Length: 493
Ligand code: C2E
Ligand code: MG
Ligand code: MG
Image (cartoon, rainbow, N blue to C red; front, side, top):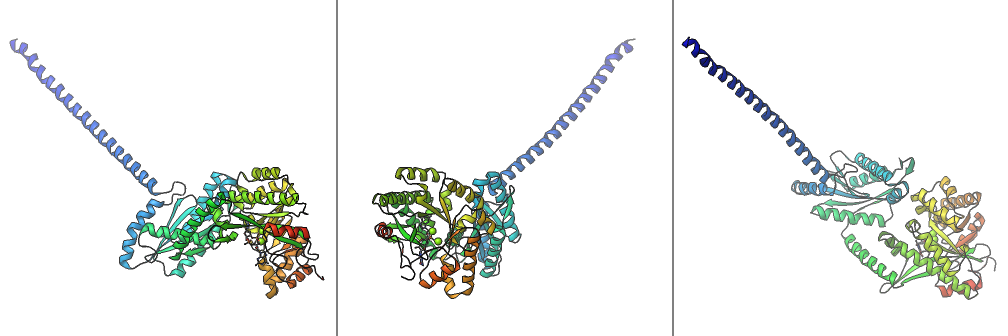
């Protein structure tokens, strides 16, 4: 019995030990699982952190809209590439590309359409070069292409042509056919720059030169472009100050009835009385004013000057003719253009027929939809509109019919070309015949000889303008012209 009495306690420690060790085992298993779970979560967290880091790096080096590399990435890439290329004696080309007319796509069709357009440009660029070349977006409508291993400058030129054609082709965005015209500046390592930033800056300067030579082209960097770029900078500072100092002048050129030589209109042509450089022609400051955001102010000045002048001529009792003012696209797109125009007219007490507007065919065709909207607004207000430099802009007939213009001005290159080339003469005659069919008036620009005047009359042209009838004159001499009512010698006189 004592044995029996002893047994249970003897058994009890064994069971407890069993339970304890089971518990320990269980605990160990739980801990191990927890550890494994923690490790798994840790790995997941680490992976998530890593992918977040990669996304940040990607973001820092890529453009969110097009997913193309950005400026930082290109700089980093060039930093690596140039020394290697230098050692191997290889050239590297950097192309700076920018789109004219992109702003108006954004403004007219909205930012979403603008974004879509930029993505299409990115695609068009990417398929224009080889996969190993880099296509990047630096922001806005600025793109950069880096090319390694190309054969020659001619080869680069051919690539530029391809880009111009592909990127400049019309695309359908938001249900509308739109185009923006690319210009390209090219700089080549090591000739045009040894450092990435220098190379990019020089490609940018070459881009400027490309734009100056007319849109839709490309330019290779040349060292003298630097001098021109800094001169431009100086001139733009002068222009800003000059507008404040009233250095803008307006000359007036007669337009005559080709048969009678009766004065039928004047064209206002801006001049800049620069304090040290003398009188500068519009070609030296209108494009500059457009580039540095001064064109709206300049245009306002011209309108105010012309309106004030007409009012003074009227006060002198002179017989008046309509005065045409040239407009650049950027000017009419400005929100303040029409209100300021109407204010000036109200102040001078002039009616709408006192002033006409001329807009170049190229400007009108760069962005037909925006132009149409603005020109129709002007027409609705009672202003007459002429298409300037007609024949240089390759506009389609359907567009010409859409424009609310009453007059086309045949570009002087046709009038001059017709002297020597039968072909130019035929084109001019066809333009005049077409204009008559569309019931548009025709003005021939740049008429310099009686011979030109007489074949223009034969071809059916109504009005002429050119040195034969008078050069652009300051207001005083224009008053004499207005008083006479004729310019040049009447035919047969
Ligand atoms: P445009 O409107 O086609 O003006 C005619 C240009 O041809 C003027 O040059 C005029 O002086 C020139 N010209 C006239 N007759 C003859 C001729 O018989 N032979 C030759 N060889 N040339 C002739 P200009 O004054 O240098 O103006 C150049 C352009 O600048 C103008 O071309 C016009 O597009 C622009 N422009 C002038 N003033 C203004 C302005 O106030 N605002 C804007 N936005 N543009 C202007
Ligand atoms: Mg004109
Ligand atoms: Mg013209």
